[in-house]
Image (tube, rainbow, N blue to C red; front, side, top):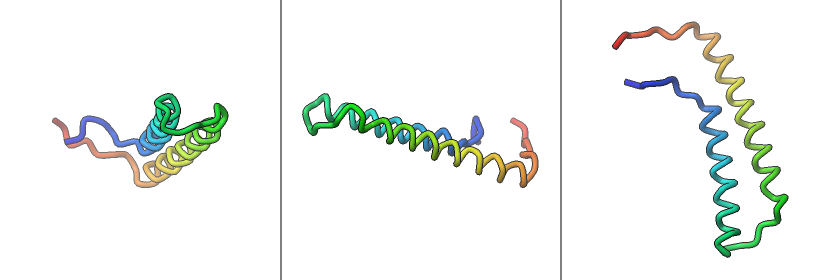
Length: 72
């Protein structure tokens, strides 16, 4: 049984922020060169995509109606 409601918007935001961290870690480790401004579009684009996914998820859930609690 799930302990909390699945929120795909937070998943998308977390994936993009993790990717930004990996890009900076690769630069810090010397694996590749990353300009300081390269991560800004990645983070902003990821947050915009996460907001769109969260908006879409909210509309889908509102259309389906309230979730039924089975009790625990």
